[in-house]
Image (tube, rainbow, N blue to C red):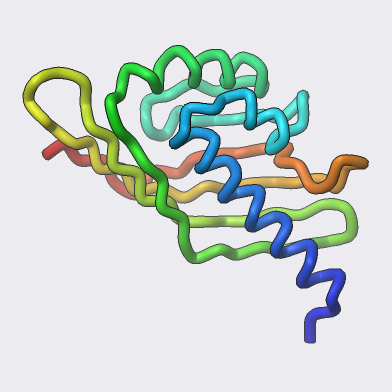
Length: 139
């Protein structure tokens, strides 16, 4: 049986994953500072993005994502493992993105986020995020 502390940790980590998606979908990239540690590593290469330290990837996101008129993240199948002040998770993401232009094409992305977390004085923060591609299709 999970203790109240374990339940709290898991819910806080799950909320952090939702906070990431909300910040991205609402184009509030500075809100990501409350999701990632300053030295976090992010790898979006599986779906054609970049990899690197959080500050570089945040800048790239703020430049690239506004070219898409509409996009959204839907998360599910949260799997979180907590070991003391470290944690890891895997969550599935469905991410449709309307492509720029006049053709009303949509890029459908299915992916896994594999994440690592650390408990900090400010609460749980993501230290690593790696995408694993499931599918990518334009319609």
